[in-house]
Image 1: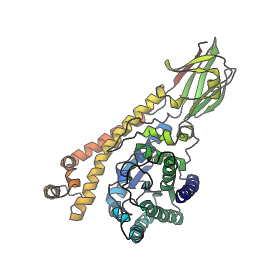
Image 2: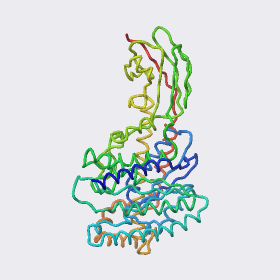
Image 3: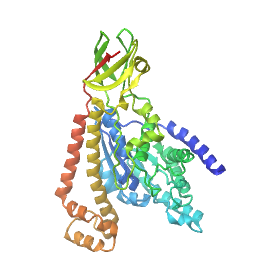
Image 4: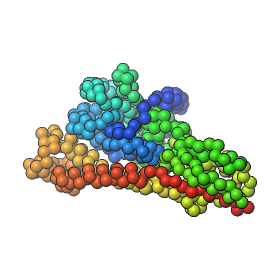
Length: 460
């Protein structure tokens, strides 16, 4: 118990330190490549980060890419830097690894400490080679990301690789040292997520931000990763918009929006409202292979996300009685004058016209994520199956024959048979690329905030 309490205290200290780190916000025109393993490959944290920029900075078009491959270590990432990362012409690279580098079942063996230290040393050796390559790319911003944790404390089952995350934190530590030495940026997911696990497990020992394999965060865990990243970029405290109208019907507060045509008569207050951002939509459906919890579940263990990252505040003073709030003639809520005086966060209402507009952006972005995932499975085949055989990006009939033989012995290869039969053809790959571009183009058309008409009418 003492060990767990000490871990909590150390983790809490680390959280305060990590959240104080600053990572420069992305800017219009940035091309961001998120490099990692299966947590990046099959996960959503990068997609959720982009969704924040899509909704909060609708005029600043960006491009972001999933550059994760399942099973990768630093050694694997080093081998694909040119063909899979630099080839995408990024202006920013984020890099995370460590889950696979650190090993698995060996932590339950007799020589766990020796094994763990050797794995960390091997990972560092390969990272030093990556570091050389990144230092040579002087025109690219580098952001180190300390990997999400292996959950070694939840009691939802007995299948635990003892102390595995301790060695993963050693990998995070040498990333942090390299970031400081090279004046790169750094965000640590590991300790803040471990702190949440320990805090919530004190109430429910079976709680986990991670999935049933203790390795892959669920959608709510990925949303928390996005939250940590955005917080490191200084996005906390930036409202979607804030409007304050005083007792005389005058606009006395106006942030990130424009309010016009304010009228107050006969118990009715109306005005036109154009925000510069959309509220951040939180998906209530779980997406991704094996995931069970939706993105929206972040508010169960991180309710501060709403106040810090998703505040669309409407405050109306000087009223008495009960009122109906309508936006574009859609009834949003019935509120007391006291509630309006204290302020109402419109972003917590999923049926406002602006939230529904944001949901369209979210749906288009999710479709883009699904399409992009095909390229990550294709990349897995190219770098894990074909490259060791000297057939990287060959895609001819000989490569297809090698694939057909390989699938007989390797279930991971066989699972990608249907995808490879399509994506062996350049025209199919180009069509998928066109589809993603079309989706992004549509997102940056749909995401522009519209003028909304707000009506607050007295009912008693």
